Length: 177
Length: 313
Image 1 (cartoon, rainbow over the protein chains, first blue to last red):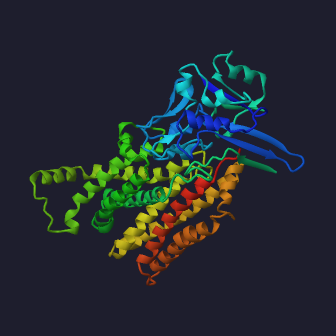
Image 2 (cartoon, rainbow over the protein chains, first blue to last red):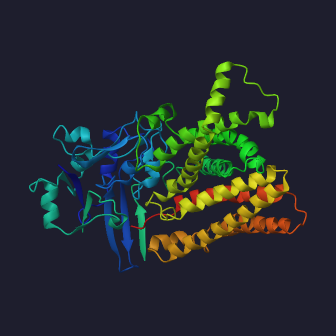
Image 3 (tube, one colour):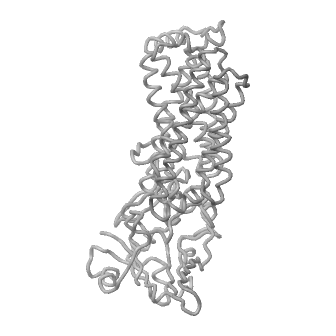
């Protein structure tokens, strides 16, 4: 099993619903966020091109945060999801410094926090909160090992990219272009 | 032209707008750790070479600073932790791929070792020293019997301690400035140089001071070579590393780095030490303070500039 997510940059309108849904679902402390929306503008007016991306932890297959964690608090769980065990985390900050996507942050309670792909919802057969609320249905989630999952189907059909593949992290968050 | 904006407004503290997860504690600890490694390295080396009589300060006196330095360093590390009550989790596992795990375990080895080394030389500082209890005397005898083995362990572990302070940074490919294997040897050399400078400052013996001053000059030379090498490597590398190097070659860190670290912290003290060897009267404390200052600044600047450097996407 290999969980992955694909975000359609052509469909995303940057409404930030995914951000709010995540904060509500996961009780993210006020002023923090586990996912965010990036708008990239290319060119000079009037020749402009825009790409909108809903970003979060990439749940990398070669995750630098898991590698550098001194206690094993950052770990891989079923389906390659990268998680943090709060009671093992000492809050040293190494994983935060090691993430090229800046997807982690220090939780006010001391441990390090990040996107979990809403593992508690997946286990119940539901979609992650951000995927479930998206009004344009621009996000796809599922198991890459299953050729019929939403994410496998859409990745087969559409051109896609990952963020900074040259960092060698093997991200599992895809962007349809 | 390309502009990238986080339109949903991400402002995670200590991550946005620019990573600043490590403040003064980490660079201060890296400096103290390197300094402790330097002092212990020379103590172990000259003991193994059988020169403890001629190099009295190196082997017997200077190491008394190390427990104090290490305890201060550990304190800084502890203050840096944000989930302090769980610090013991470091010692429930060994993660070979995590430099921080290496560091935690090496400190667990070096700190008690430095205390034992001092205990073996109590009589040098306080000639009247008496251990009072028999079991303490037995313990001292036991460690004295294996002192050469102890010195070897100290030699090797101090090198690991010194080099790990740099590897801690270089293991992060997310921060292009840190992602160079030169940082390990550079921080080790800088730590050894700081150790040598402190010994020169403490020593009253002419030959001892001259030998250590010569070693220090040589180490500063190696440091300068490594720094030039580091920038050559960056400039020949990918765009993100070119940008990282440019922080120091025209960017915001240019003045502080070249003036405080290279000029005041390396070239100037090396010149003073050369003049002293040429029999000019130079107060011993001056080059030592400058070397320590340069060594501390090097860590601060690399730590802060590294957090400013990032991948483009």
